[in-house]
Image (cartoon, rainbow, N blue to C red):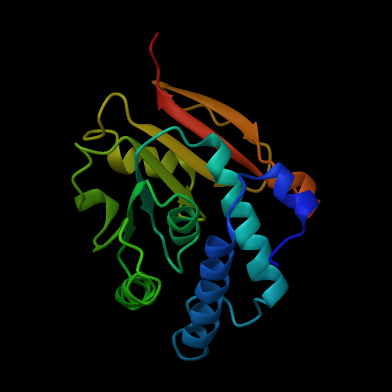
Amino acid sequence: MLFDLTDQKSLKPIDERQQTNLKKFLALLGKWNKTRNLVSRKTSIRDLNHHVIDCLALNKELNCKKLLDVGSGAGFPGVVTAISNPQMEITLLDSNLKKVSFLNHVKAELQLKNIKVIHNRIEDFDLSKEDWLVSRAFSSPEELINKIKEKAPRDLVFLMMVSKNIKPSILGYDVDYIESSAANILKKNRGFLKISLSKN
């Protein structure tokens, strides 16, 4: 078990097959990380389990059929979200080729048909058909908005995973802080910034 039943009540329930795939994902990450440094070498199994819980908490905030994970890196949150939401179409976007190779390997090994992996930068990516965008440890909210504000659809919703209660002021955008359900489980500050174009 990645987490106990008490924790599961605070998260979107996942079935046994999804639990198995999450464990396989972490095993693949551990194997690849020995030679490719996808995450810090100091990252423990406990740390990786916490990353999974952090990402599973995202499910409660998602209200979309399509999701773009910007700077997906080692697959947090994109792979975790794909495993726990098989009906959702998820694009994993990263500019680092070795991380893209890992994500493609995970997609093939776990047979995740709802994932599309793209090697590109967010500045050069076509956002016109995207509904929701999520990012974790990619950049500051202000930096991300600045990169894409000229081409983002008016109804695009940004959800940024953050480790502290912040509410930056971004001209032309509404920003709300939402505490993550992972905060109580991990006993750490965890939350989301929900950012959308201001309607005022």
